[in-house]
Length: 388
Image (cartoon, rainbow, N blue to C red; front, side, top):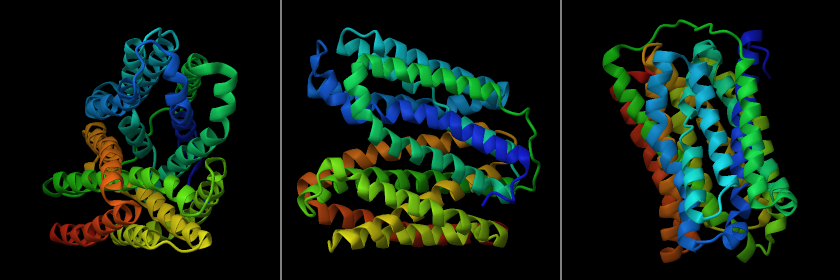
């Protein structure tokens, strides 16, 4: 599966995956239990609790580009360490909080460690262009694993540690991430031929808007799907892992051979447009209902397309940006990634409330299908298909 990676590329991918996994695990395991555990904190209301949950994403989105630009000037490793330190300090502040105001400040400080774009730029610096999507997929797989693990351990840990103990644990995970960053190999920036400068800005914006849509529909799916599983299929919350775990694992097993074939054939741009179409088809079929087995199949298809896009798009963005200013441009990309998640949650919730599950999924599927066509035309207009 990873045979085409040399030792430095494999080490970079696995180490970065560990860094991101520790950080994301610290975030994911808080979410399923936060609303219940925070109810005893002075100043709690649904609004303040919602702000505490959401403010992390807003500070993340606001600081992705500044962190990326600083990493271009001072180096990726120092900014990764600064970001993880801020995330850890935010965890400590939240763990010591005695009011919702202080807790919100802690969550905001956690979000100030906006290192997603820096991590992607670091991965691009240390990998050859033809292998970059595989390394990005390794990082994406680590995020998915963190999500699945958090579903299993969140409630037992919350029972054992309480909310403040959970935040202390996130601070400890940040420290482990910093140790991994310090163990990373020295910089070996891989040089490559880049697109002409005239096409770079257009391509970066195309993929920034694409990742906005990708994470919007991903968040929207998790707004809609839990209720569907309960109301339409009678599947209690404690059994939802029976859908998520097989779907994510199945998609991961399929995506790596696909990425290898796509990368060797230079077909990334075609694969990306088809993947958005596949997203739209999967969401549309989910909206029609059917048996639980069919739903599982559609969710596998959704995650297969999602994981392919999660790996291929940042790989292509890193290629077209070139070495100069890569961190800042990857920061723009990840800014739209977080904004998409925010918009997907807000828009998905509104659509679900006003129109129901089927219409919400249908709208999301239609947007993905339309974007597939628009993306194909955009890529053709700038000659990306010939150069990718």
